[in-house]
Length: 367
Image (tube, rainbow, N blue to C red; front, side, top):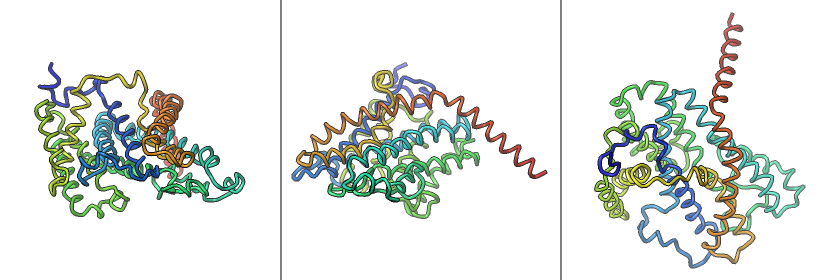
């Protein structure tokens, strides 16, 4: 089978030889790259990609949107193939262990060494411990820690965390749709998705759960496109000529009034073409899926680099931060994320036993 010329997305169901990990790692690093221009006070340095994007988007936003498209595709597969319970547990163990570790690191390691306050003052401040609410990824984010990064261009300890509440709520809405049987038939799933898409384009703020979130509109749109690509995967052909056309149209859309209507579809198609129809790169074997670790550790590390090396520029920040973040991301993956994911079956079994016990207890009290 010629994957480049004749395959559809459905042909790759169950295949592990794909470039999802490579694409996610690239997206995570591009967020680091883009944030360097905001974090490091490097007068005179302008992101050269801005001239290509013509104000329609910036590289960090593009990467985050790509994350959401890929996520929408993969988690739709999860809820359709494995059911709601597996889906919900899988989402929790994928996000929370690494996030909790990152928040702990931010408060008790980075915060202690970066604060301008005394260690005792910092550790006894209520604001230091209020930051732990970020590990829930649901409540309003706390952006600062006492005395930390106050002299930097930005004072947020981890500005990248803004996207996690958006992602979590997208997961919740998808889970609700799954429970309601929306994915039982492709026509039904398409109808509901297109209704949500149309409503969101004009009345996004009125959408439940995600409507009131900061900058949620575009990531949610890309998440929904990922859902649509999975639902219709047997009709999405991976064709080199189509990919070239999408690339050319996408590039020509920058700076145009019709950008928002055309570019997202072209970009999402190119993402899945890159995943399935380009030569397989075994990143998982060599590096592991360090994308989430890169994403959540990049901003705080970049902030610390900017603090201890204020005379540096955006490129020194990118280089130094990349080296440190890769180490932290590998530690997170190999010692936290991967071991937990490898024990998902056991976690699912124990979770079901807990739920069964709660259900029996509820029935006992009802009697």
